[in-house]
Amino acid sequence: MTDRTAYDPALGIAYVNGSYMPLAEAAIPITDRGFVRSDATYDVTHVWKGRFFRLDDHIERFLASMRGLRMSLPLSKAEIADILVECVRRSGLRDAYVQMTCTRGVPPAGTRDPRLCQNRLYAFAQPFVWIANDEQRRDGLKMVVSSVQRIPPESLDPRIKNFHWLDLTMGIFEAYDNDAIVAVLNDGKGNVTEGAGFNIFSVKHNVITTPERGVFEGMTRRTVIELAGEAGVTCKVRPLPIEELGEADEIFISSSAGGIMPVTVLDGRIYGNGKPGPITNRIHDLYWAAHREGPLCTPVNYETAA
Image 1 (cartoon, rainbow, N blue to C red):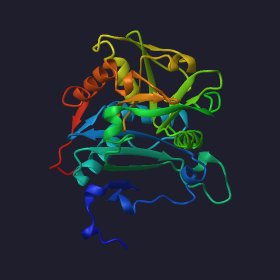
Image 2: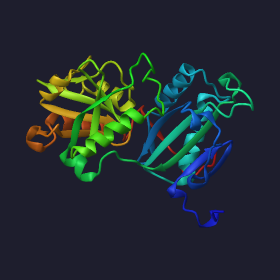
Image 3: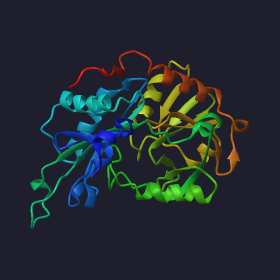
Image 4: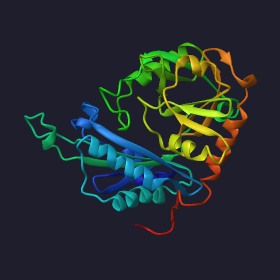
């Protein structure tokens, strides 16, 4: 058994069944449908310089995802927020990746009826996670348009955050096979959708475009749409054809795990002389400036126990 006295809380703190513990000791029952059936939903927020960013919005989306999957928890929005804050406070992390997960739970013996399961909340905070390293965020990512088709929204509503990542994972392998870092999947109709944990944006003639359908409506995506006016550009939410993406002046992706990240190579073609474009840089700077103060920030009190 792990010696908790020797455990560094900065490696992560989890909340399981009403108890806080080192992240390395957190576990779920192997028969939980969240594990054996991917029957779960989750959301990820982050803490930057001691402040949650859009905490209320993330919890609202988490609750909406649970409603979409016919799940519920005996906890209010405020109680969920307190659990997430406490995970961060106990860890002491000033920059953190914070996840909340609701699983269907363990079915009673002899039945597959999901209505009979007690839904469970799991949460944890760990050091901030980046999709891209320092060099990639500075100089840009290499991306491919994957031959893999994203799970269609008729089969699974992508606005409900879920663990059905095998199509996204196959896209990642395809990227690596082609000397790239990330892949954006297609919708089977000639448009791009999203990649593993990120949304995509193209820039052409000072207009930003991001896919409308078949994508998870990311919180960073929402922030980009809101910041576009402040950046002096228009943002359109509509289908984004693969061909049009290839003709873009700039391309960038957005994720809670990294913010705004430029793409400077697509399918082997170099964009913007291999450097991030001016609109990408502008949105990047506005995004991180919004983390310093204001209504979207929730400071963590590291001194007071919950």
